[in-house]
Length: 567
View 1: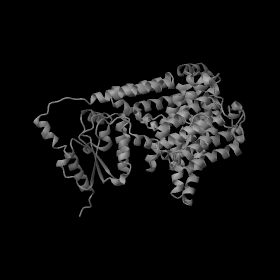
View 2: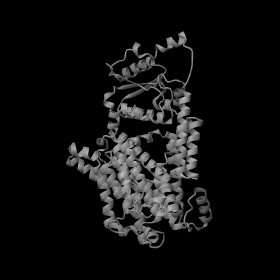
View 3: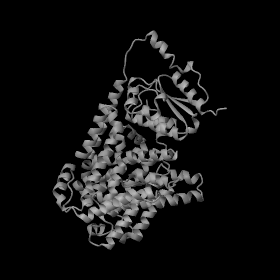
View 4: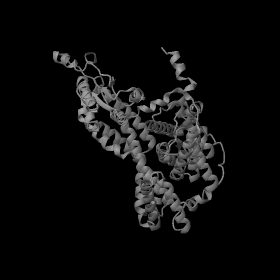
C-alpha cells in the first residue's frame, strides 16, 4: 500500500530550493564575494576556448557554444543544487549533437534539447533522477573512453589542415576519409597545432594558476593576425562571431518529430543527468559539501529548456570547469554567475578578435579535453576485475565508438541489469552449520569484542553494488564524527563490483587526507577476490585488511600505539 506521507515528502517543493538561496540566507560576506569573483573570472577565461570548440565540434557555430555557456552557466548556478557547479556545453554531447544535426538539422537539435529539458525537470520533481546511480562504473568508463576517442577523431582534420569535405558521421568512414586526405596535410596547421599543444601542457607546469588554453588561444590568435591567411581561422570558416546579445527565438515545435526524436532526447537527458551529478559529486569531494541532486537536475532541465531560445546546444555540469572553479577559490554559486558574466563581456567587447582564432588551436584544445575526460587510468582497474566487467566495458566502448551513442546507452542499461542479476546470483550459497563454523563466528561477533574509544566501526550489509554505494558516502559525509581509526566490517557484505570498489577507494583517500586510518575486516570469497584483483590490498596495505573484527581491533591497537607519543 502506498505511504501517502512518503509520497508527499518526495514531492516537497523545498527539495528543489537552489543552493544560491541558502548561501544568501546564511549570510554572504565581502570576503566570499571577492573569492567568488576571482574564481568566476578564472573559470570564465578557461571556458572561453572550450565553449567555442564544443560548438564547432558539435556541427554548429562557435557562438552557439558561447551562448550555451552564458545562458546555461547562469541558470545552473542560479537554480542548481551545488555550491560550485559550472554548467555549459561539454564533450559528452559533441558526438550525439553532431549526429542529430546531420539527421534532423538544427531545428531537430533545438527540439531534442528542449525535450531533454522537460525530461530532466520531470526527473527532478519526481525524485527519479537519483536512478542514474544505477549505472555501473565499467559502463560509465566505457562511455567516457568512447566519447573521448570520438572527440579526438573529429579534430584530426583541423589539426593537420587536411583539404577534405564534410566529415563522415561514422568512425570507420571518418578514419578512411582521413587516410585518403593525408597527402593534403598542411604544414603551418600542424605547426600551430603542435605549438598550441605545447603551450597548453607546459604553461600550467610553469605557472599553475594560468590557464594554458587561454595562453594558447591568445598566442595562436596573435600569430594568425601577424600571418593572415596562413591557416584556417574561425573567421575564414564561419565569418567570425556576432558582437552583441544573441537573437531570441522560440524554436518551432513539430509534433511529427516528437516520437522520432524521443530516443535522442532520452540520451541527452541521461547524459546530462549523469555528468552533472558526477560533476557535483566531484565538487563535494573537493569542498566537503553535499549537493542537492533534485535541485541540480531541475536547474539542468530549465537550462536545457531555455538555451535553445538563443540557438544553444545541450547543457550539463562540466567536471573540469567545476574543478577549476574550486581550485580558484570559489565558495558559492556566485562564482558561476561571474563566469557567465565574463563570457558575456567577451562576446560584447572582444567578439571581432575571435575571427582570428586558428582552427588548429581549437583542435589542440579539444585534443587535451579528450585526453583529460577519457579516464584512461581507470582501464587497468576494470581489466583486473574479471571477464564480466571487461566484457561490459569493452562492449560499451565499442558501441560508443563504432555504432551510435544512443545504442550504446540502451545496450549499456541492459548490460547494467544483467550485471546486477549476475552479481546477486554469485551471493547465493547453501551450507551446513558445523561446530567449526560456530566457533569461527565468535571472532566476527561484535558483542564479544571490546571496542576502544579511538575506533569507529561501519558495517556494510548485503550486496555493495552500483546503486547502493551512495549510502557509504552518506554515512561518512561528516568525517569529524569518526574516530582516528575506522573499521569497515564486510562480514555481511555478500558481493561487490567496480562501483563499490571505487566507493571504498574514495573513502580510503578521504580518511587518509583527514589523518585517519581505514581497516577492512571479514570479507567473504567474492569481495575478497575482487579486492585482490583490483589491487585494493596495495591501496591501503595488506596489514589493514584482516580476516575478522577481532583481528581488526588488534591491528587498530597496534596503529594507536604507534601514534601515541613515547615517553
